[in-house]
Image (tube, rainbow, N blue to C red; front, side, top):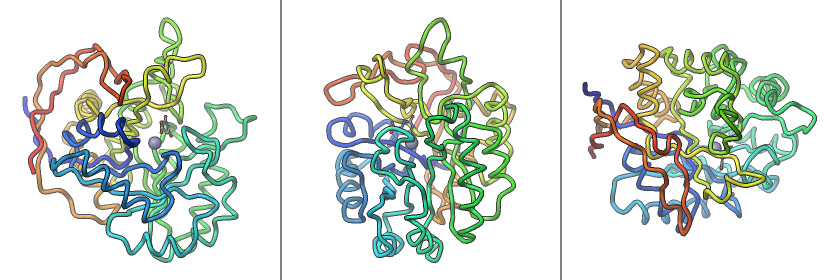
Length: 345
Ligand code: DOR
Ligand code: ZN
């Protein structure tokens, strides 16, 4: 069996920088025509000038593959309305990313509370520049498994109302609450969904022992939430689209007493999503989810190239290079049932 799709885009990707970026970029370039690149480097990508320089480094590493990095800026307490205007006028910067300080990997540069950013958000709303959100509250007293739902009710709902024309993407949603909120929200509110949150529930973290390779943020939730995400992704609702949140970390950083958050899926993203959509009996809805809805939301043309997948077993390697270290990819050593045959130009 064969599957031919409009070439997909990854609307949430971590590529890192330097030798690590050079190790992983080919995986994304093999599956995706474009990707929205997250700005959580150290130091963060805060300005259009920094985003341009980062983009050039990615293009150099992607080496004529045709892969197009679409850039985001990191919202910090220093972000100015003038920078927002530069970003909105720039063809390569598509969005600004909100990391609540302390919420996840490299989020220390983020904002603590949104009041200090109201002028920036007002300018983004005026110019229609999307805000991508890591949607978790950071209060250590809130249970880790409740942080997204609390963010939706306490932060996102008022934000969506206050900035009524601000395009918003709630990234990597993990809960039924987030899916319901987005489904019912005003126009201009959407969500990305990862392959790992569609495939696994929180039992994966503890199967036979502690499994750091399944640790990401927002953390995997219980089965009822996973099912709600599958329903959202396969519903054909254009508010839900593909964003892998593929996040390369060296194995040494994950297999540790205090392991980092992040799951690497760029090597097999389309085979993994295809598996989810097939299990749900919705393979015909994979193409709009992976290749149409995100482009429509960001108002960029849909791709004309195509991606071909085939029903064929292949074994995921146990590791991939990551600079001078290695990473453990999701499904390391396992056999997957869909294989990418090729991505056209
Ligand atoms: O698990 C995660 N890893 N979640 C994020 O929000 C960030 C990402 C990373 O950069 O490693
Ligand atoms: Zn991310």
